Length: 367
Image 1: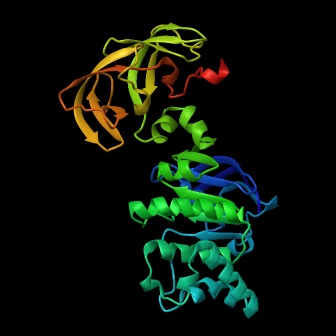
Image 2 (image 1 turned 120 degrees about the vertical axis):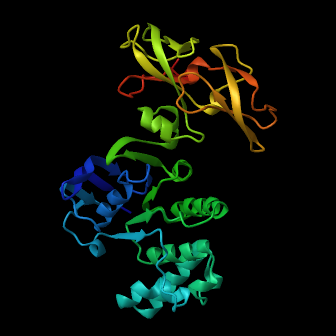
Image 3 (image 1 turned 120 degrees about the horizontal axis):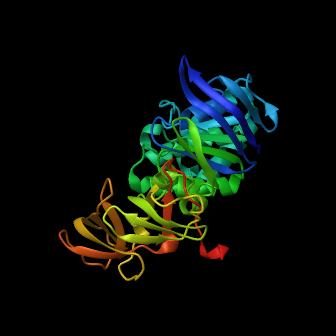
């Protein structure tokens, strides 16, 4: 196992800068996930760690060894790509063993390593088959097995589940979690899917435009986003954002007026806010309630998704760029055209200043 540390890392292609002063420490044995929208730099950051891209400036250490100029093969890493890159004419056994065979590892050691990897990945019964005989999930297991036999200090995964269907992605998330638990090796995983990030990570790195927006545990990012970008990216359905103006502000709470005129009390530290400041109020769809009494608003339903266990009602409301999304119990019966009376619990609201930075929330555990 190993820790990975990046200090002031930048990456530029010509005059175009892709990564901006990245400072990050990945702990020994940690499952770290890089997440963000397409083009945010997450795959480039992974390739920098792998040595597949040169660092423009800054330093990278793996297990406290400076590796800026160390070739990929000598960094103690193994990388699994989005494409499986299996040799179609070889059996699964030979695909997994190929790297060890090239390194002239003794045959007995190769066999032991392949059999152990196959056991971990539950593909022992498939070793004599060819890749064309396998499902997508089985092929991805073979690609992971090829990495396991190298016994790397760090595993790197670049969107390994993006080619799989939805049901298989759910199953493979479980397999990745079990793999990390068994191997206890440092793992760095790139995805654009925040659900994958939330379910797999010890900690998540949220990236935007080549910069780290926030690093923290899944629940830290969900409950305490630092800014509008993180708040909108983490959580599904995404957080609702409503234009608001400060009426009263203190270190204990803020009273704001929404674009439609409703006045909402928010349990945040608004000590630095002043009357008249323009803010953005955030509330997650699952926190909007139909049975609460505080901070009530009225919204018109425009579209309904009945998903079985939950019902998503999309509502028209002033000051919301897109529809106000309400996540209701699956037993709730509501139709387009109806009016919903909703409550915004003060301790579930967020406020973001004009720069998009979150005002610190007061939560029950801090009282």
